[in-house]
Amino acid sequence: MTDWRDVRRLVPEVLGALVRRYGHFDACEDAVQEALAAAAAQWPVQGWPANPRAWLTTVASRRLVDQLRSDAARRRREEADAARASVHADRDDTLALLLLCCHPALTPPSQVALTLRAVGGLSTVEIARAFLVPEATMAQRISRAKQRIKAAGATFELPPPAEQAQRLGVVLHVIYLIFNEGYTATSGTQLVRAELTGEAIRLARELHRLVPGDGEVAGLLALLVLTDARRPARTAPDGSLVPLSEQDRTLWNAEAIAEGVALVTDALSRGPVGPYQLQAAIAAVHDEAPDAGATDWRQILALYTVLERVAPNPTVTLNRAVAVAEVQGPAAGLAVLDALSADEHRSHHFVSVRAHLLEMAGEPAAARAGYREAARRTTSEPERRHLLRRAARLG
Image 1 (cartoon, rainbow, N blue to C red):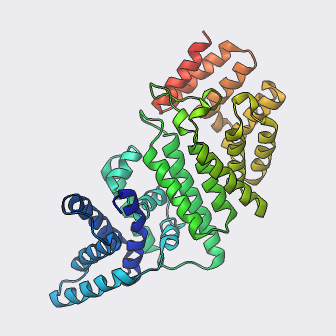
Image 2 (cartoon, rainbow, N blue to C red):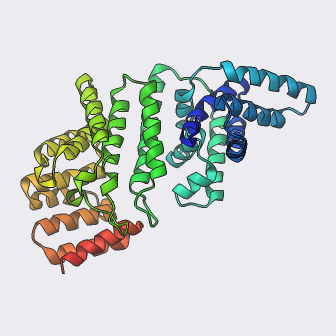
Image 3 (cartoon, one colour):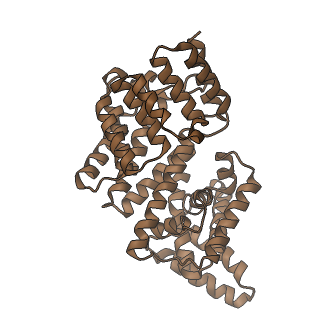
């Protein structure tokens, strides 16, 4: 093992071993981060250890014991016990950690931050950089999350089956949020943050390994893989967004598409069907079309219609409006948009979709004004350049 991505896969195992032995999730998590920092400093110079997991567990245990114990003799006994346990502890606590980090007492931003740190192994600095917030802000968010878990009396055990199923839905949502922020950053100068998309896919793979029979887990993994397959074609040379209809599909990752299609096909055959499976099916239809003109919009519209019944939300309605416009004409798509709430009308996503449908309807002046308005409302520089370019095309 000589890859830091492999080291991050060890984080939940090391953290789980410590929490099972000592309790004190917050102190254990800090100790693991200190061990990772020590590894980053020592391994490139001294060489990689034969057993990185045991090394991390031993070092983290020592840091934890130093913090929790002041008596020297007792500390030596604890360290010896921890060193022996590090080699033989084979239990996989990743699922328990994911469920703990996504505890319902936490807000979604806190769930995301704690998952990336405790399960993903990212440092506070890395998480703060990915979400474009100051390190102090992210550190405070993570600290509050750990305090809330402690105050809620959460234990490091798998909850009962009914609660586990509910919490698993939160875990899926957190991984989905991490991927979305990486695939289309909400603000800043970069469209994609590959460290987040990569971590989300890694977590989804790990979850699929732990819960292989869950159709929605398989659906989420399929959705992320199928969506990420298009990433090489999503940006222009200047970093601006390239819409799906204009992408060079020869740049798409054919191996990833095949994997995603196989995953969602298998998941849909076993039922029941959930929102992530439906979204993955839509992504598969797009990915399997050899060019934009060959896209099966009728099938996509049918899938969005089902998805809107299963998991209604404004984003689904926006996407369904585009599918309606492709199948029934732009006037029908605009009618779908008109049914959305006044609050949603203020979002840059709504304004840009409406401008696109107006362009389809042959109303260039209104479409141009819409693209410019959407550009003013977005906080993403690549999206802003794309929208302004769309406006410029219309004169």
